[in-house]
Length: 254
Image (cartoon, rainbow, N blue to C red; front, side):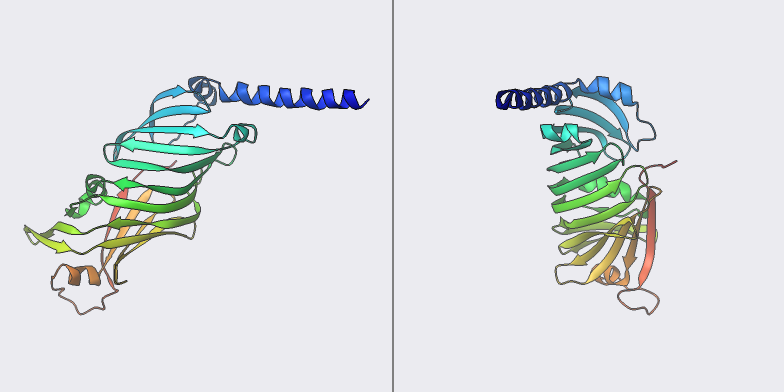
């Protein structure tokens, strides 16, 4: 009797291992065609590899072509909540960290993500203001929970650091420039939206940014930023007053 129970457990383990291997080695392009996701904020250029060790090439107007690779934890394939290492590479972005994805809730999770974002990508986002920065930005120890279906963020933390440098900005009909010190954007989630508070190393807040649920990004610049570049503001307002705002649609949501 004991031997029969032991054999039963062994069979169960073998079946579980077999299912894990079967799911893990399923070609990713087969899964993608079966799911046929729509209304994604990016275009899917190519899908290769397997569920366990896959590679997807994405394309977005802001970032251009992005190569995303991952290696999942095999047991996560049975739970419907995928978990593993993520590596994202593009001309303007490079990120490494841990990622999770729940196929039912469409919830994406990022943990301990580090990398860089090029100045050219930031310049595209703020193009409407005719302002340009020089120097890449570093993303440090960033964590994020974001729902692809609703555009809501339940939690976010981390920071984006710009080491400082030259900034070009419009002044009347001409362009002016100034050298700014290091700026740090602390990432958080407020009212289910992604936000970032931008401050100097001394803690002076100079701007705020947010990503709305409908895909619009907004940047609010404070009077302290005007003081930082050495310009005069015509109206007498406090340093923390918002003096102008910039909005840009990052992606469309139905």
